[in-house]
Amino acid sequence: MRLAVLASGNGSNFEVIAQAVKDKKIDAELTLLFSDHRDAYVLQRGKNFEIPCESFELKEFPDKKSYETALLRLLQQYEVDLVVLAGYMRIIGKDLLAAFPNRIVNIHPALLPNFPGLHGIKDAYEAGVKETGVTIHYVDSGVDTGPIIAQGSVEIAKGDTLEDLEIKIHQVEHQLYPQVLAEIAKDFHLNKQ
Ligand code: GRF
Image 1: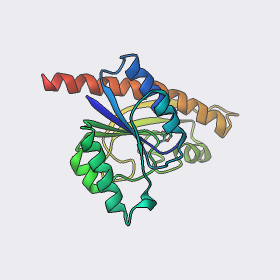
Image 2: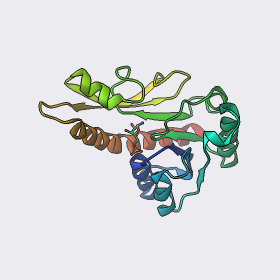
Image 3: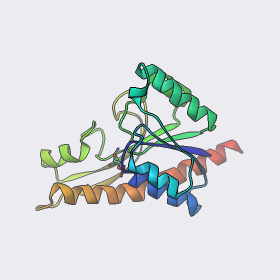
């Protein structure tokens, strides 16, 4: 199974996925890292793992459709089977969705359907809930609405700061995402036989 990771910023999730592929815990090839920010730190991580890195920005295109067409061409050129969103801060457009039906996964830092959108951790923290977590799901045309694959929960203890919660959420993300991708890779190979 050929994976592409799409990421916009830091890339700590990319890092654990790349390490799990390298350690053969995920039976897949990491064929491409794409970032929509040319200066994103994740690209440095990609180079360290010697994974092909590509980057271009929306503002370099006349409109969103041509940006997405270029991204789709890139994914096709690398013969990608599964698109892994790891901190990719853009909505996936309909052409990409149609080209990869049930083949795009995302990680969201809350227990969906609660706290969708850009600030899942902060929104849960400010709502004062006792439990939040992490969701991995297939991507559909909504914002954080696609079919849920797996969830991991995180307790918000009395006295936790927002930073404490962020650390706890990322710890769960870094466990869960490689595990789920390993399962998807296993199913992919079984279905191919
Ligand atoms: C993660 O919290 C993920 O859930 C959200 O964006 C963040 C990306 O972090 N979608 P990183 O770039 O992988 O460190």
